[in-house]
Image (cartoon, rainbow, N blue to C red; front, top):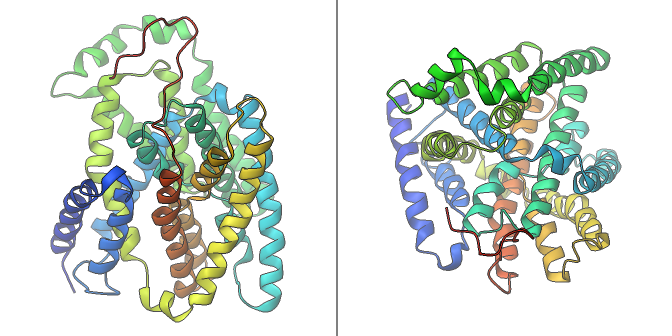
Length: 404
């Protein structure tokens, strides 16, 4: 069996090779995430056996998952998701959830699906953390289309995380709801800190700011402490670590509401430079390609369900959105992006496997379906783009925004 050091070598090598290989593909049609998954599957225990999961690798994987969702939570504009676009996205997700429960109930009657609750939650997820690098690379993040995708992605991650906490928690439903409510209340309590205090600060904040640009790297260390603390609390209360990571991102955005370019650059370097690639490579390593090949019909069925249950409601909701007035091609693009799922599918199936409600083979098929959505759907959405995206200008701006 490969050692932890050997496994980390192959993971690190893939993390370097994937973006280089993706860079040779015109128009960024092949997302780096896909290559991380595919190469991870090849070196994993189910194919070449060059790398395996272990305690050390699992710890880095958990940190990578946490950083992925911290950055996703940090990117979310709370006013946006509580506004009209967010309410529309929530309604759409609830429709998807109802459709998912109906579909898995029927599949359960035929014996095609077990762990129906876990499968239903997985079918309603959107991989916002996965989409953010794709939207950034494509210049879509600050466009109306990008904001619509982010709204659906935010709800498509928050909704399943909350559903996991309530429906798949190790405690009773009522206890899970109460603990979840207490956890969320504690996480958002920072929102009541007076803005003046955050702006003017104190002697302690002055020391933190001075240390941000030195070897102390105080802001980065505090961010990691926030992430690890909230994910640890989530684990203690029987909640998924994704919820803690998301809450950490929300809190970080509240503390620096206008953003901090220096901190963001450092966090992205740590996250996308090392931790997040580890998460995706190890996700690929967990795919049992033999089980997937043995059940192609089930794989195609899950792919079809992801499109029907998540993609179709988002397409209809976008089509009914008269305010943005998207073209039919743009409506398809939003739906394709919103159907992209993987991290939450990995998380949900992991919980179900640990609880003994889902087999490793079934989990591999679901994860493979999620990986295919990451491979195929953003590619199709990119091909549907007729013109380069344009940033929306503020009505008070006279000159175009300078590139950052």
